[in-house]
Structures are given as C-alpha cells and as structure tokens.
Image 1 (cartoon, rainbow, N blue to C red):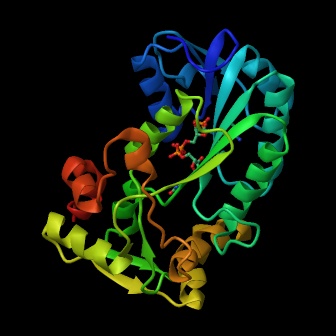
Image 2: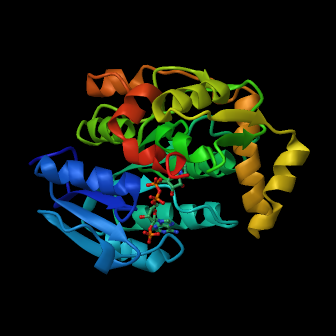
Length: 294
Ligand SMILES: NC(=O)c1ccc[n+]([C@@H]2O[C@H](COP(=O)([O-])OP(=O)(O)OC[C@H]3O[C@@H](n4cnc5c(N)ncnc54)[C@H](OP(=O)(O)O)[C@@H]3O)[C@@H](O)[C@H]2O)c1
C-alpha cells in the first residue's frame, strides 16, 4: 500500500519485540504496508507479511543507520529506562537522519518537560528537542500512563502503594495509543504536532482501587505513601538510585497534577473513544489475575 514518503520502505518500527512496537508492526502489516522491524534480537522479531527485521540498538548508531536505510518514516519507541537513555536516543535520531529517514514519529510521554516531576519524562523532552532540531519532519505522541499497568500497581496484598496523594491520571490503553499512532503514521497531515494521548477519565488511584475491587470481588485499596515511605518501600529492590527516583516520581507527578490531563486525541485521530478502566478490565481479565490467585 502507498503511504506518505519517497523511499521503498514506508515505515521502520523500533521496539517491535515489545508491547507498543509489536502492536504497531501488526497493525501496519494488517493494512498491507511494507516495513522494517528494528529489533535488538532478530530471532524475537514478529513474523509478519511484508516485513523484514534488522538488528540494532539505540546505543549502536552504525547499526541503527544501516537498519534504517531505505525507510521513509521511523516510528521510534522510547527505549528501556537507562541512565544514559537521552544519549542513546539522540544517537538513534542522528543515525536515522544519516540514513535519510524523512520523518520521525516518537512515542514520548505526557508532560515531557526539562523540569518534569517524573524524571523519566525529562528524557522524553530532551529526545523531542533533539528530533525538533534534526531536520526531519516529526510528530510526538505523548502518552499518559498505560491503563494496562494499573492492575499491576496493586500488589498481591491488594494494596496500591505510592506517593500520588489524591492526584488524578487519565491512563490510556496501549491498544488505543497504537490505533492513534497508526492514524498519524498513515497520514501526512501531522507534521510538527505533539499530541497528548490519554484515556477518557481523570481518576485518582483510590478510584482505580475501587474499580479493581468491583471487578475482582476482593477489597483492593490505595495507600498514599509519604515520599519517605515510597523510597523506603522500594529500597530492597536493589535498583540503582536513578531508577528508584523514576518510579517514585511517577507517582509524585500524579500528586503534583502533572498527569491530570484529558485530550480528545484518540477520538479525533481514530474515530473511536479511548477505553475507560472499566472497559479495559472487562476486556482483559488476565490483567488482574494476580489479584485473584491468593
Ligand atoms: N506510558 C507508560 O505508562 C509507560 C510505561 C513504561 C514504559 N514506557 C515507555 O514506553 C516504551 C514502550 O513501551 P512498551 O510497553 O512497548 O515497552 P516494552 O514492551 O518493554 O518494549 C520496549 C521495546 O523497546 C526495545 N528497546 C528497549 N531499549 C532499547 C534500546 N536501547 N535500543 C533499541 N530497542 C530498545 C525493547 O527491545 P527488547 O525486546 O530487545 O528488550 C522492546 O522491543 C518503553 O520502552 C518505555 O520507554 C511507557
């Protein structure tokens, strides 16, 4: 199928072994597009019609340049959290431009800003800035917290613990993000835009716990930790300080109101409304199974 762009391969999709990139690759294949899957391990690349895989990681610019050669649009999934993620991302963007990529659609995060409370959202802002200045056409998809993650926030003890206070978040399902992203990719009309991609309802985590109680038939609660309690309760995970900071500040950003955002982008881009938490739980019983196995 034809698509915006002048190269033989309309789309290159990174992170195709993961949840978002995998959804994107499957949707583009269903639409009949030719694509290059940019993966770190080709043996784990999805097997899709009109797709070939090239191995590259963001930290290897030469491999990235080769992997992206011949592609018009690069759908760039943000990489796994790392202390040097911004450098990895900027290297990957430079490699894309060197390969002749014309457009980069970057999966960013809601509220990406240099001083965002959520420290990982700062990486997204620095990546966006680099893309803005790269010379490539671009669109940023700033997704909210994944709705898919909400059931997993409750531990097997049935408690969601975090320093989110009574702050609200309009979490969005990965499937809705992928639908919106495909609409952007397959049209040439979104250059220079940044879209907030959110769910339909701003809810406090206490309400998310109530929703989980309703669907599981078990009492699920929310405990609003103090910041001190949040660092303390995560200290035994053995994670480096920057990572714990990212985890704790994801809740702190909710408390600060930085994720208290609803946008109409999913409906506008896809023609259908995004899922609510109740919709998601109804469709994905596997997401809360850990709360049933006691
Ligand atoms: N909005 C949210 O709530 C939220 C939550 C968590 C994360 N995120 C961000 O959103 C991204 C996509 O989410 P997802 O659900 O698709 O995550 P995912 O299922 O973990 O998939 C991440 C994908 O990115 C690839 N990847 C990671 N680091 C890379 C690197 N340095 N170079 C090249 N490829 C790399 C992974 O490859 P391998 O299979 O080889 O590991 C995988 O295919 C995440 O990577 C993270 O940055 C967002």
